Length: 394
Image (cartoon, rainbow, N blue to C red; front, top):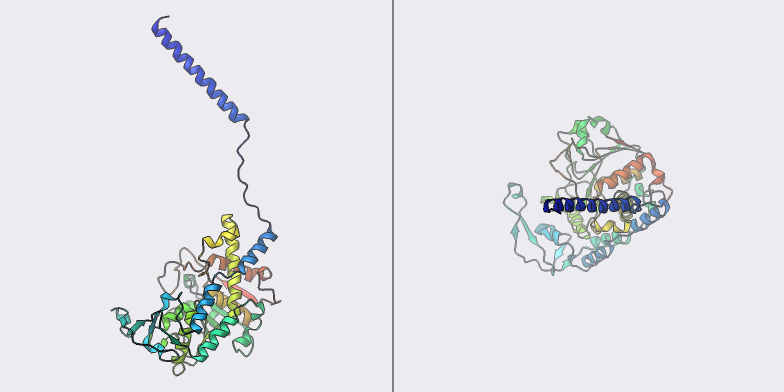
């Protein structure tokens, strides 16, 4: 056979062999069973709900909170309060007294806004505090009441020293969606108006109203107020009560210091909400956060704390205000809760993002149930509490 012919035959043979191999491969693929895909998670509603209720009742911060309270009662600044160790010198005169008070003083900075807020000093870990007896009693009582008791909602009017239930309440949030409508007159028409975190109303009255009966803040906000002269935290007038929930036990020092400097200037003290209400709010929002995590990720509820700082996770001041309104009002109207891509985060500021300490989407899911089907809200109906009419204005 001539060489060119041998080469052509070899090439033809190679093509035939490759074709046969490809045919066998294709045949095996055709008759082979399809790969088994992992099925999408299917949740048994009853078992899932039981798991969520069980996990929502767990407080990962309990151990560290107990240590902080013990430290304070024994006259030590809590080890976990490193971010809260700066205290004004005049804040420590009464009701707090330092047995040793010679520290180096440091200025906060040279920004013009700080000129009126002079010297701060760091409070070293080893310094001994003398805790005023009234502060000691308040701290001990607050911690003792940190337990689950759904009946706290029913008892809120008396716990807040109200003469009775309020006929209608408007809870005004801080979302930029408030600027879309002129709800000011409608808000002011309610018997009581609740506002959050010292949001400004000057210049915005047409959208947010001008009336304020209760101011709700969290203790992180109060901590900032306590660093100002005379502990100013009353933007709505001296007679407007301030209610707050405690984020860190060390913030009881701010409450005591601010109340000690306020009576001669302000007609209303700063009051800490009942710790049983804190526990109820925390359980509800954690339940909705757990449920959202399971539904959106398909992962086990026990993995929730891998994506959340479980010890620092807590509910917002807005949720606190809504829960108090549910407990003391016969009709609740809610304004300025929610977000939109074309609206500012806060109507009165340029804040861009939300705090990652809260799960706002979980809170929104709770609000929807509260307004549309309150009977399904966990923990809320344990004491047979009848949820009043709740309406959200968007």
